[in-house]
Image (tube, rainbow, N blue to C red; front, side, top):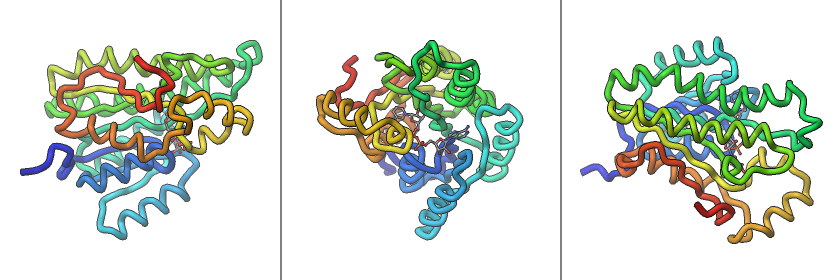
Length: 253
Ligand SMILES: NC(=O)c1ccc[n+]([C@@H]2O[C@H](COP(=O)([O-])OP(=O)(O)OC[C@H]3O[C@@H](n4cnc5c(N)ncnc54)[C@H](O)[C@@H]3O)[C@@H](O)[C@H]2O)c1
């Protein structure tokens, strides 16, 4: 009997899968038997390195460049994913960018559009490309990477917090439409995880932040990927509209 975390035969698309949290999820899904396609933007080198490393072990992973904030690029990426995979069972939206850490009064319309465009609109566009087909096939898992900042807020990050709170609301609302068709929509709201996105903050900010965490350290990407595996697999088949928070105790809901 297959174990309930097994993804053999499943086809997964991971946005933002070239590095950080997305890359750890690509690897975890592939190691659990899924055929995985990933997209990224401006990070082909990391993506190709990951594809080569996993392919050398006989795992099925492929890569394409796509700016998820662009409707036409997501349209083309979705067509590519259908050719690569046949169809998509699991969509994991991890593509995201951090905020520029500016006081709100100095935040420009361009800053706002970029953060909302990639983190929130990107989640909408990629999900919209596959959700109807998943409902028709009566199977789907949509997993959105939000952030605990959706709940906590943070000075200098109004745009990012708004985008991630939007992802949580989007997840809840869409889960009502998907669940009757066995398309389960859930989110993950990680705490601070050691990736390039986090490392963009100043040393002083990082030291202060780390010391405030009950667990006393930042998370590792390998500590987020198992939550994605749970939600993607049979083991997570009773989760609907939930946002799970591996966060070292930074927010307790
Ligand atoms: N690292 C953290 O502390 C943390 C905490 C909570 C939530 N998150 C969220 O986790 C997700 C992954 O972040 P990470 O920390 O792994 O960051 P990262 O910078 O390591 O990786 C970001 C990924 O997103 C891709 N990406 C960026 N802009 C894109 C675009 N326009 N179109 C398509 N892909 C794009 C990059 O190519 C890369 O693959 C993001 O949604 C982020 O907001 C991160």
